[in-house]
Amino acid sequence: MIQQLGILDRLTELADPTRGRILCALHDQELTVAELQAVLQLPQSTVSRHLKVLGRGGWVTSRTHGASHRYRLRLGGTTGDASRLWEMVHAEVAASREAQLDNERLGQVLAARRHRSREFFSSEAGKWDHVRAEVFGHRYELQALLGFLDSRWVVGDLGCGAGQLSLAIAPFVERVIAVDESPEMLEAARLRLAETPNVECRHGELELLPVSEAELDAAFVVLVLPYVADPGRVLAEAARALQAGGRLLLLDLQVHDRIEYEETMGHVWMGFHANRILDWLTGAGLIDARYVPLPGSQSDKGPGLFIATARKPG
Ligand SMILES: C[S@@+](CC[C@H](N)C(=O)[O-])C[C@H]1O[C@@H](n2cnc3c(N)ncnc32)[C@H](O)[C@@H]1O
Image 1 (tube, rainbow, N blue to C red):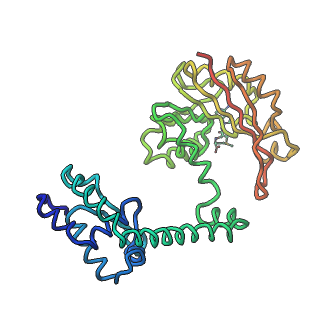
Image 2 (cartoon, rainbow, N blue to C red):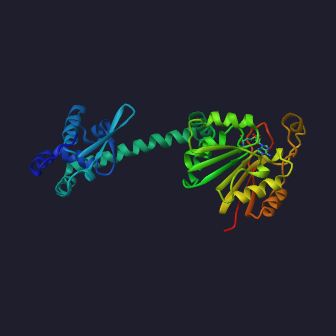
Image 3 (cartoon, rainbow, N blue to C red):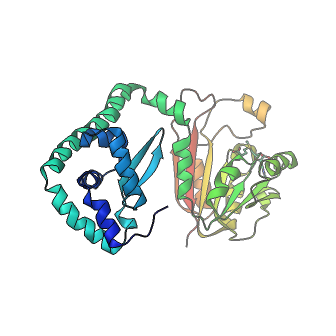
């Protein structure tokens, strides 16, 4: 707890030359005790003792980083008088021979720190793909893109299946309306989304969406079109449900030759060419339509995917 101290107490705290040197070293960066020891060439007990005094007086603050603490100057937390006092003391201490030597050693300490991270990347450059996937997983940077969703949006997850996408979107938007015609899929979605109050599951067909006109700011139709007899009609319904300026995003299969999907999954389309999708989007009254094939990865077993986007005029 930082005490409210008078100017005389503050003078006492700064009167010690070592404390002045510590504050100089912490002026532009945070340092650990070990780094301060290296900069000041003082034993750990001396550095820690002075840091304690400076911490109690509110001159420094610290954060935990693994097993160590990183300290930094806390001028924002001091009073105006204290700031002015430090300005005067700083000018004097910084000009001293000791502080100049400290500064040289500080440069070496910071260079050694940078060297450690550069060394990591120079030795790991070829392995970084593997390391990032192992430490963070394969999809984190794609999940980060959800942060671009507008927090005021009502989003439709049309053909929501078991609700994976709704669950991913929900934290980033105001509300999700998840629609599916399969009672079993919708039940699985309800279970998955039981703790996600801003998702509403609605039973219904995409050809006759249970969504009012202009109720949605954005709509996702993910891996659904191969199942529907008339995708153009589904996209026209999605367009009707969008606000003026609302966005539609499709993710689906590029044209492929997996005839077995008809038997195993009930597909009635073997993927989609760009032209066909763009025609349907335009036919639905949408503009700025585009179709982008996604690069596949070696571990993907299915056909290539594409993303298509478009916008309702207005
Ligand atoms: C392959 S799943 C994809 C589910 C989800 N979008 C996902 O990415 O996990 C396709 C879903 O679309 C639903 N579906 C297919 N045709 C539909 C239609 N005409 N109306 C409403 N839902 C439909 C199915 O019930 C199924 O849940």
